[in-house]
Image (cartoon, rainbow, N blue to C red):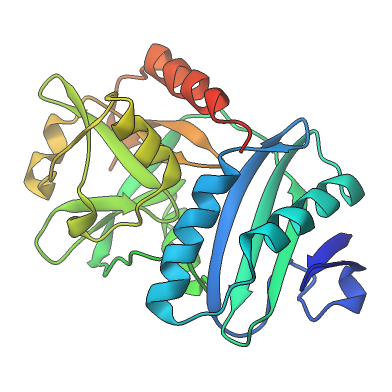
Length: 250
């Protein structure tokens, strides 16, 4: 597999990376959907990464260097449907990988994670704390989990943002409830498709429909929460996908 390591196209074996496409150590990352080898909302992701890097004192190369590296990678490692991940570590290294991605429209059975989860504003690696939430949900017979913060409010999925239909409105929790400010979430709010409101755990029985959203999944429907069936809002899911394609380049 070809990767970009510090701006240079290399084979995975030549770069200081794991076979799974991650840098060693700690840092920040961005994950971006590609369709027909073209990245979705790349500039927005890099802007978010730059903000995180500044707040976490992580060195990032100039955006022009990153954009050139990404362009070189997309030429060297083409994907009809892919996932572009860009990592920046705390030793001034950066990595970009472009891997195939299979879309799934399968509705998910979720549980509420039984532990209180402390969210974070930045996409950081290693990513083990989030993967553990996902793996524990699967070991319990579910597809994923919804996390709850210390105030007893719903926060997000294990690796995704959450939107729900409650009291006749589509809403997503505020960032203050301990969630990552996702790019897909940002676009839904900007385009006034989703409002912002805390969702107390005690009101989970009142949720009629829900999606997990992310820049790669876009919108994946939730069929049940803790084995209680939800309505599948296909039309709204299609609207989210259509919105995402408007931002498919740049």
